[in-house]
Image 1 (tube, rainbow, N blue to C red):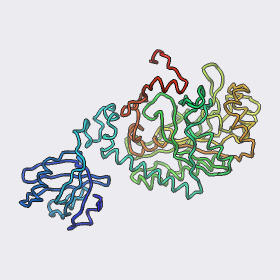
Image 2 (cartoon, rainbow, N blue to C red):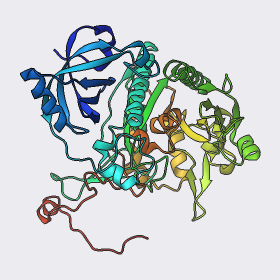
Image 3 (cartoon, one colour):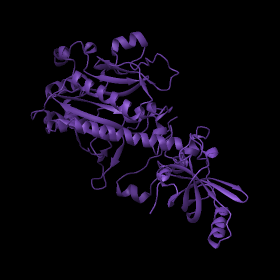
Image 4 (cartoon, helix red, strand yellow):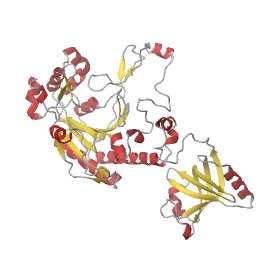
Length: 471
């Protein structure tokens, strides 16, 4: 039966079998030292000289081993002499006396070094061989912490009465956000699905359905230019609640964030509790930013400075002197500004119920209380210049649903990748996304996006037209 490396300390004197990779091999003539690793950690092994048939065979096999070979090791767990104990290392008080070796798989010499933190290696090489890059200890730690974070959030929200519900990845294109990805329909040529930029409409429809408390670790896709804290596909912690006001949503999320940090990353210090609050106007006047970095010591990697920013303008001017939403069209205005919205007056002065949670100068999440009144949502769309046909085609389903007894509701979505990058002291979200894309949105390992055959295009009723590349 396999023994995990983390459990070897309690098996001194026993003969065990481990399945692992060769991390490092050191041949010292009569002795061969091997560092083994599995998903639980590291241990040092040694192959001793022997005149027995089994011992000679084991030494012969050990002499052929190289880094990254996959092996099954049978060995005796021996305590190290006191002078050789390494208290600062995992399994530093033991050594595995190797008695037998089975080679499960040999390994070619890796094109990139997986034993360093990887920061000295070019991004293109790392992402091309991402399955190797992920072996390095820094990234292994990142994803184990990320797993712990999502599990903590799931359990915490479930105890608060939330239900996790998955929403579709094939949906309808609407003019409610950033540029999206289109997916052609094979069965209905000339028609398209859209990949969701967020579960925004679905989570509101779940409130209409009466679930009242929803959450999801949601995949979101946006056809936007990439940057350090943005990718074409990313992950949100998405949640929505019925019969709440702004204070309810902010209080719940603040409590969740505080308990998350204290439980999963106790080495981190939250600068100020409760989190400071700024209106959009105050943040811009004081910090010239709506996502201010309010850390008192920006050199402290374990300092977390959360703050809330509220009272955003609902609308902003477009390049053609029209109006568009500043966050999303489904937000409700502040209650005292509802009359201005309904009368379409003083549009520039209408403030929304939007609230953003900011962490160390990054927008970690954002949400709002929603327009549960279909007439109010229609006014938003009219202010944005949508005619009746566009309102019906893009948002008719929402207006109809809200007319069937929609509760008041609101929610928030965290940029989970951004939060994880900050918690792990990483410079960009690619370090906490398992199979990340380049800054230009390319997936180098799979070589995507890629061309498809003429037959596939014909089946979808599509034709590729050559065009000049956008510079």
